[in-house]
Image 1 (cartoon, rainbow, N blue to C red):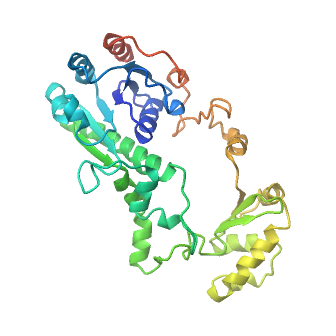
Image 2 (image 1 turned 180 degrees about the vertical axis):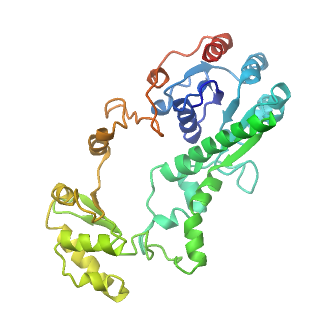
Image 3 (image 1 turned 90 degrees about the vertical axis):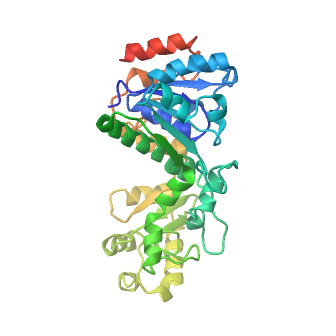
Length: 356
C-alpha cells in the first residue's frame, strides 16, 4: 500500500515508534535514527525497519543525516518543541532541502500552548482531556487504560492518519507540510461522542452514572464463581432478553430494564447469577448467543482466542500482533527487533534505493 514511501524516524518513545511500525506494516520503507548505544526500549514496536545510530550533537553528523532528509518523503520526530530546531533539523531546515517533505511532529501537549514545554505521559494526557474521568466508577478513582487511549489511540493513530492525508495532499500540490500532532488533541477528538451526548443532556458529569461508564447495570463487569470476570453489555432490548434467558433471570426484567429505580435490584440479580458459574462455563454457554456476554481474558488467553483469526505472526511470548488492516505478512515485518544497526548513511540510502 505504501511501497516506495520513504520514512525517516527520529526514535522517541511510545506513539512515534508505534506509528512508524504501522507505516512499515503498510509497506513504507522506514529507517530509524537513534542515539548510539541507546538500545531498544520498545523492541516490539521496532519491527520491520533498520536503525542508524547517530550522534545528532555533531554538526558533521547532522550534515550526513540531511542527505537522508533530502530523499525522504516523511520525517517523524517526537521531542519537545524546539529540540529539532536547535539540532539544525527543524521543519524549516528540512523544507529548505526538500520541499516535498512531510514533517510530522508527535508530542503530548502540542507545539504551542501552556503545557507545550512540559513533559508528560499517557496518564497525564487522558487526565487533562477528561478521558480518565470517563473511565471511573461512581465514587471511585479513574482506572488507567495502560497506554492505549493516550499514546496509541490519541497519538499514533492520528499521527498515521495525518501523514496519510498529507501524502494524498502532496500528490495534488507537490508540496509537503509540517504536522503538529498532539496526544491531547487526539484524545479530545476521541471524546466527541461524549461531548455531543452531554450537550443533549444525555451524559452526566458524575462518573459512573452513564450508559457506557458502568452506570447501567447491564453494561459492566461481573465476578464469576472462580474470581474471574465476565463482561455484560446487552444494551439493546433484544439482546437484553437473551441475557435474561442466559442468566435465568425473571422474565419481568425485560419490561423493567429502563426503570432506574429498579437498577440496584437488577445489578444484584445479574451479579448473583454470574457468581453461580465459572468464567469459562459462562463463556461456553454464551458463545452461540446474542446476549453480549464475553469473558475477560488476559493476554495469553486473548492470544489463544484470536489466533483463530490469524492476527499474530509469532508466538504469544513475543507480543507480535500482526498488521491492521489485514495485509500479507511480508519480509519487512520479519526484520529482527534486535537486528544490528545500519553502518552508515550510505547504507540507509542504498536501502531506500533498492526499495524504489
